[in-house]
Image (cartoon, rainbow, N blue to C red; front, side):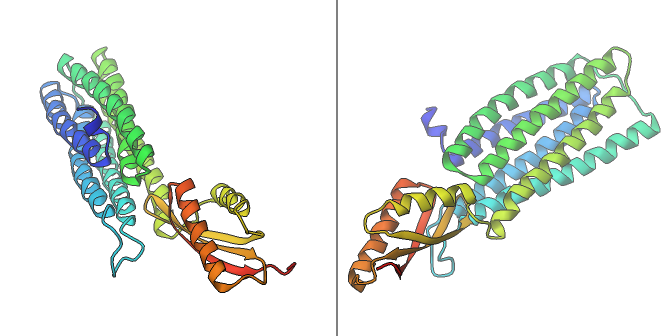
Length: 290
């Protein structure tokens, strides 16, 4: 049963189910527990549900094979889903911050009760478990959307922890700490949204695989049979993988047919050795030393 959950889609469905449960829990805890921080956290769960649905759709689209209109596949749908999560988080943070600040200014405080405390504790435990499980799946499948979802779960842990601290301190006779905890939640959400945006916008702007991977690829290709040297390597990110262009130097007296075979063999070898490489285009150049 657990193995069936270890896919991006199943993991996202699991998060969706728990977010629906937590939304209900936080609404009950916020209303009957008299906690503005927990109600703010409930709004966060509502938008988490929306984000989960978008991530689900993004993953499904990203899994589609290349077609005539999308020769490089649909991988960037994964990044678009992650960016949507970031935008939803930003809107959530801004709204929660405005409400918390308004409560502080108007001094409209209320002292939370034990229901709010229990709801916050349960939320922390569930979200911590979801974060650990989701980030593992996201890294295993190199899915930006699932990783963004995991980061959202981690943000929720910190958010709910802040809410819990605010609730407990408010119960000790300092009710202003409850809306202050709501303000802390807002700032945490805003920071997380900006981080996710930065990580995914680069891919949509056709970012490179990074110098470390390019160096590793150059060294690997240089050691392949009949490759005299690698002139240059460049690549572009598409979703969770990369398309690579490489220029290699071979003996100048080599036939076109043999050069074509070498280019094909290099592409096959690189894709087998580097699972994140989706395709390799090899350009053959004559080595000036031959």
